[in-house]
Picture 1 (tube, rainbow, N blue to C red):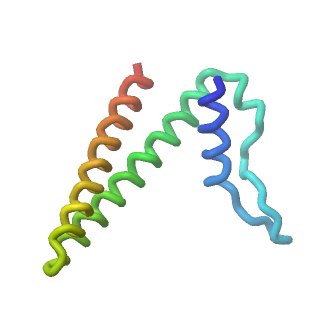
Picture 2: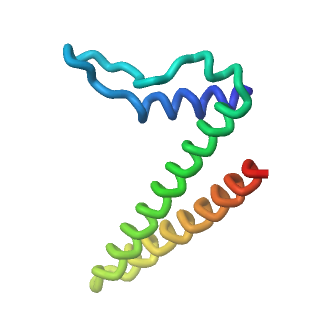
Amino acid sequence: MASFKLLFISWISRNRKENDIGEKEVFQMGFNMLNGKNEEKKVLKDVLVEAIETEEDLMRTYLITAERIHDDDELKERLENFAEGNAKRTKQLIDELNENKE
């Protein structure tokens, strides 16, 4: 349950908006969500999907940048290694997402 609370807090921080007077508020969300298993799974799914998108974006950025580098082979290799790490994390996140569907 502790790991879910961290995921939930992370989800809330990304799903806040500013109201008319400039205060941050979470839209259409209450802490009573923690009581329902279906809601918990939905938040977990949302967090995993967002993490997959982030990893894929970073991977693309690293690869595109590496392709544009012609005078620094060491940097190019490091960027390709970063992209490979993102690919592995993406695979792990997809596996986790598929496990939670079952």
